[in-house]
Length: 201
Image (cartoon, rainbow, N blue to C red):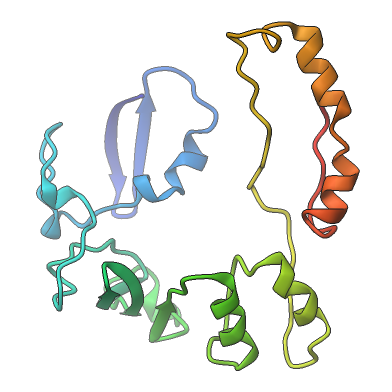
């Protein structure tokens, strides 16, 4: 969708699209659009190589070809082929560092196999911030005076898909009937324990 990109200034570029596309700015915030430091990636022209992909190299964070940004990857640990821990350190070359950005010189990201392990680490104060804690664990955290639970609207949507190519779901009226029969209020209150919003049919 990108026709070309021109450099306007040290920190500014213009994207010219082949056609108008409203979600473009949102797409730039997603992981596939992260800016890659050309010093550590061999992407040239339209050809791709293995160096253009973020991958893991045992014991060598730089060879793991991580993303760049306000923090740099200092260590990346995997156990049995699964992420265990990442250590990030402040990137001194990032913009506005002279104004006190970043406020933390180091951040550690820990990975947990399930929400129970994550919740246990939260309760023991082994971690400072957690996201995607299981619904079953959040309720008990609400009542813990040593923890603060923030809730906000997310972009995650769950929905039921119907195969329109085959009977009876090739009939619009049947699909509408199924949509009308789903008790969204009951789903929100039971499956999601009141922590979701129902969408209209």
